[in-house]
Length: 344
Image (cartoon, rainbow, N blue to C red; front, top):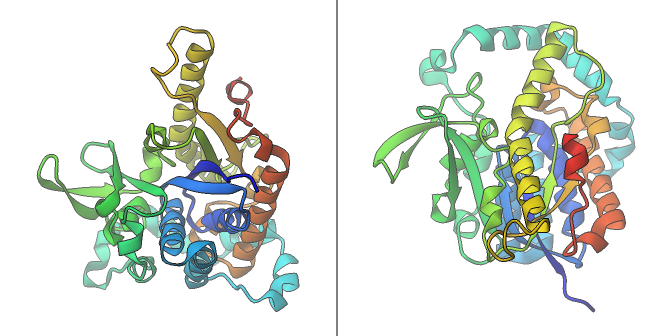
């Protein structure tokens, strides 16, 4: 049997839509034809990456799948197969529209724009904390298993901070997933300036950060799991649709910048303007389901609905299955994403 092909995974953030990435990872962990050598994650991608690595290190692929399922059960997913037909029958677009039209969501959304999360005083809590703190950080931060990094945005400087190794603490993951209108900034000591810094969601500066995966010891193939649709043909005209598209564009912008940089360097290498070995050749692949994601909105990112989480999980598995069928042969050979066409 041939050796598995090594890849790195770049896991995008997007709130509860990260259940799509759960499905992708669940399917990839089933195949012996790929080996995950590195991970970079942001927000929900950071949580998925931590769960995956902790499982791989402590019990292999099966434990990693169980760990991911446990995380998303805590978020609200239902994993009972007997309920699958009922969950699959729910229209995700209808659910998204119903949430957006509901009075509680409208009130909460409006308050988040005018009331600071600091206004709650001693009653403040971050609902993710109870999940994040239960992960095995000896495994998440250890040397065995795939290289793992996550990122957050420094509130003071506006710059990205990448956490890796022992820096990946529960607070670092909470910082990576800290939407500033919903949660208080997470304060973490930065050893370089020797001061405590406040951090917001990493999606503003790296969603996910690709450059940690350029390390020479890591494989050349980066598989991006994208959960924010790159393209929407229709012009958003309602206030809610406009806000939703702004959210998608802002959380894709850092990824597109890094993909442009990769494309530029690869062209220079191909044209001989950079000598071989001076820069790393990168092969880019992408797993996504924009058709499904276009049916959803910020509402289903913030409000985890069991039926939608189930559909996202199944869609992630199907998308990963499609990637394996269509592009497994290109891993280790070249990119399966036409970056030139993407930016054209």
